[in-house]
Amino acid sequence: AQSVAQPEDQVNVAEGNPLTVKCTYSVSGNPYLFWYVQYPNRGLQFLLKYITGDNLVKGSYGFEAEFNKSQTSFHLKKPSALVSDSALYFCAVSGMDSNYQLIWGAGTKLIIKP
Amino acid sequence: EAGVAQSPRYKIIEKRQSVAFWCNPISGHATLYWYQQILGQGPKLLIQFQNNGVVDDSQLPKDRFSAERLKGVDSTLKIQPAKLEDSAVYLCASSLRGAEGGTEAFFGQGTRLTVV
Image (cartoon, rainbow over all chains, first blue to last red; front, top):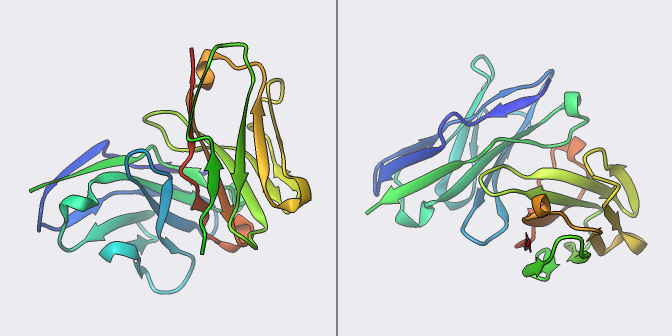
């Protein structure tokens, strides 16, 4: 069955340091992978997606993610964290297993400390 | 470009009462989704429309929840009667095409429902 795991409930990073938010997935066939961000009392905002092609995907606000097929991972990264990056981050996957419905991770709370 | 509009932003009702939420998707977006997000969890799909037809409503509790998308544009989600466990944020999203094309969805700000 299709699934997504975000192994860390919370990630703490000092401002200016690189950040990584982890996501692993399980899906048959080729996955479509997404990252969304949710700020307090706001809806989800699309950050980036992997459909096919280059394994390194660049998205909004300086974020990028690397698709690793052998490790079935799609970790979200940013070279230099900002306090304003503090939010809840969700990874989602879709594929043939779920008739392309999005399967969501539980979310990772990212806290950037000044 | 205007985003997905939802109303109301907040609603408090007593259990066994009814409530309705409204969503206006981004213009031209054929696919509309209703999600339920309970605090601390990822969104759970309730129903997906393609134009005004239902694509997936397998997780919609049909004994109490109903949704419609008249004329393939805006949509309403209704709960009748509400239960305490329905307390959640209800998110509406739309996308240009269905998810099979790897199309991203754009979300509204959500309606926070509290059932007391």
